[in-house]
Image (cartoon, rainbow, N blue to C red):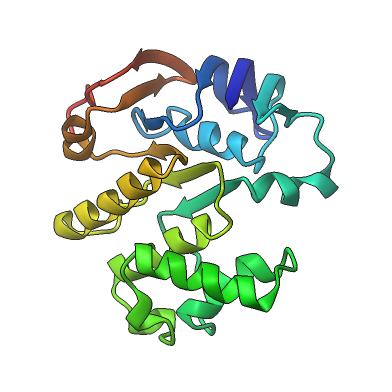
Length: 228
């Protein structure tokens, strides 16, 4: 599913974000990525959906080597990799329905299939009654649920979340985590970077800890392991 071997990433400004990463993640896993700010978590996440390429080493996603993947093929990769951002990244002038449908329109899905799939994911995230709202009419938690729906409307094999509860209150954060659990229960691999000690310690899922660009801990049923 996901394989990184001897992965290094140095940016143009000379900062080395990853310093020799080796990891395998199987289909259907739920993985938390933890560590101090600046440790390399976001770069680790960005490598998986080919936002950045490794300086050295290999990143294999679903048997595809991302370092040699042609730019024209990146959109096809991203059909199988949904991404949820901390700041939602919704299109402000489009409705909830249109924001989600857009992900299917760009791959030329039929209108009939678009409607069915959009309404299915809106049902999953509990927002069928908000389909005609625009983002400014929603709470932060509702906007994040729209972001999640958009990320999974393609039925991706992998869903990546970079601090998805970072801007949300505790009760809303738990609602979001219940949605991610439901997505994972359907077979989607979840990889989530987070600073939430409570969420990680409650979930008891696989925990990968990154410090100074290296994986320093990789535990199944792990704990957060840092003072929060």
